[in-house]
Image (cartoon, rainbow, N blue to C red; front, side, top):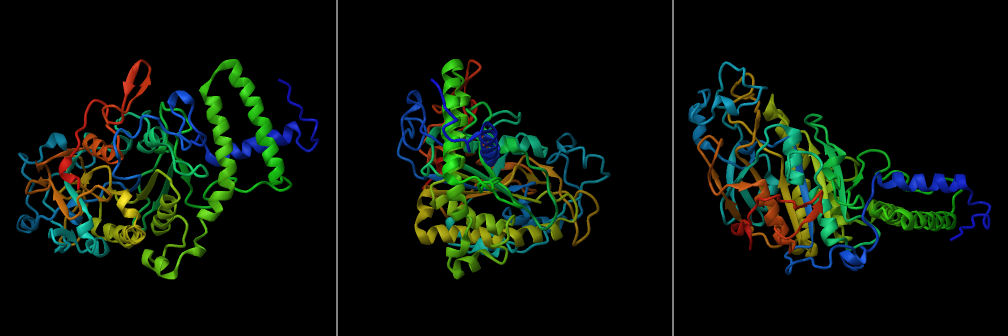
Length: 483
């Protein structure tokens, strides 16, 4: 095959290269765009032809990830009796020394730090929710609160990696990448998986890494697309000066021909991923500006999300953007809100975090309910682990800190297929260990996949001679959480 670029002198080798580099940087990775190869199904939206395994309860997931580890006993795991044990050492029979992190293990004592915040019961189920979350509390009957999550990791990086990929060791595909690979997208002009981040006003928070929305060993087209929290949300979303839409189309067509020749010669599937990336990037140049324009939102909707709704990089902005992505067919939407790692002066820090997140979270649920989309959307709220009941650092009646704690923490879900108004699992008197109905990270993943119509044991990808899955060799569906 011969490709003649001389027919249009404006489309020089240099302009072709610059145009392709601009489009490549648009996604900063390979993202799902075009229909899958015949061997993996021929659905227009991509995905595997054999999925879903059974009728799904939900079509999409919005994961509100609270990065750093929210303190469960200050938000959802009410322990009023601990007020009588203020300052007493947590018994070693409950919290042995070998389970403490090196950040607090050298303390001379480990005094009980009861939550200073008031709790009230809400909804028909009488869910105990902290005064810090008044907007969320009004939606108690929509929430399935799980107080008995537990994880294997005690430090942030392995814990968040485990929560989002099913393994503490980096390199596995992220949850959203699995879904893009298996289910595809309902909108060819947007990626199947979008990740966003916001910083809490309490503190800077732990760093986030691109591999948390990476595709791992899956084809790179399934990597999540990150919407930045400052500057252009997506880089190079506009054509550069002097490049018309027609010229950009010509560049892409010529580049696709070159890549097809290379693919025919070497058979590398990543070449087809690259072609798909360029095509999606081209379409996103039209779809993303419209997506990010909130001018069509009614004022009462903007008001519901709070004062930060029009400020890029804030949690409220990302929550409204998540709803707009969901209604446009994006399969998995991941919001990271940093700043929950509160080792010192937790009361002041957690107040600010809840002020950032409570109202927008409730607005997102209400917004989806009013449009009917909550019926087929799953919302997940939670972090990578919980916090200790003992104070890290000096304890006073108004100030305390809390260290990392993996043995029990709280998450909640809402939306299609979930039993709203449910409180599942209990912890011991100190909120240190699961007392009843423990839920592992693998169990959570298996349950979410089930809601999406996927049998987690059958959803695999062969890599280096082994069939891998999101739940590894573990996981059970927690049927008690399902409607």
